[in-house]
Image (tube, rainbow, N blue to C red):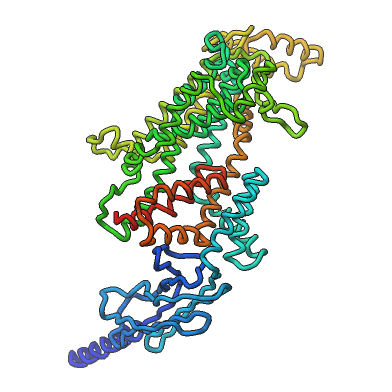
Length: 615
């Protein structure tokens, strides 16, 4: 038996050994995991390219093997900043000044003077432990950041091909930030295009647009588009009335500009063609109604997208100013901007005046005269043509025996509006029971509501068409006798499957033709849904390239260039709206997409405008 005194000695030795092991294991192990630069003048973080002679701040991110203080250490972290191997700055961080080990350190401010590739390196040392990391950057003069935009402008104005223009702009920008054509090509595809596709918010927009186009395809196949034309033809007999109905349809479908264009354009085209309205005029009426109404009504996909961009910039403001003198939610800021949206308001006022007066100007006057003088009822020379120069025809028209009824368009659209409103309120409900409708709209998840609502409307439309049978140019709802008859014929067909002769098969097919058939089968609905999505593929490509273009414009530093102008002491902040308008006009003309322009412009002007105006 071991004496108690010896046990005490052994326990003391064991405790001392454990403490020694703990101190030994608590030795610091630090590494530099990443380096990023921040433009000091505009405070744009994680810049991709450096502008010559423009100061930037270097930040190093640190990783610790264990976040335990080592009492035996000096606790003095020494850092050094190198640019192209030349030391630019150094300093120390006393770990005793903080309750936690630092995860990042400010490694000083530096500049570069020559264009080309530069290596930014940060080294740290703590006792005997050293770590380092470096990152290569390309630099060029600030004015060179205009090069991708100039490429887009020149190609857009000369080729009239927005896809080529945006694609070349992204490619040129990628070559600038990588330094070579091959690296630029790879970066364009696996970074900027891929990130535009992989972004979750972008995915919501993609799916919503595709589902909406699929819904329009189903409605077209059901005969609803032609049916609404037939229903209105007794009331619409002149060019003015056809344009008025098109304008009204644009006001009704206010929740999305793409949906507005797809539905109003497709449904009104037969009507305006019959009234000798040129396709150019129809396109103008639809587009000049779709965008303005979607951008001032608080419940639309356009506004949802815009609010997300506003909120992203507000978050940047909140990061630097926790108590700003402005609203801090994107929705409330949007509401305050409605009264300043002069183009949208004036265009919605101008359109009825143009229709009522019958006045046209310039190329539109020529297009209208060519259609009316020659009595064209096919949309005139402005109708879209295929590669052979012939008027494009849809591959999704209803079959010849399909009765074209107006309700097959109206019902799905009404349900679409109901679903979207309900889901906006549902996603914005915080469960407190004290919210107003506006509060719910403010907190709503517009992306989810539009996505769910569009798919729900498409499924509802398919179900609505499945309960309709067509027979002898009429529609039969809930044709129970027809369901029973089809079931009997199906069982009989299965029973006699292996006993039929070819003559019996031909006779059976002839008998099937006299029976009522479902308005649209499930296979027809799927096919028409996919055909509708196919028509919008070009818009998806443009939208993807626009997002990638916005990212590359920021990467080359165009946002910093404009930010310096907007924050210049020589610029009166009251000039910001005019300057922003001019810049947006140039970008919109170059890219041909308002969504892309918003993506580029909000990061360029919102935060700099706030800082230049003092909030």
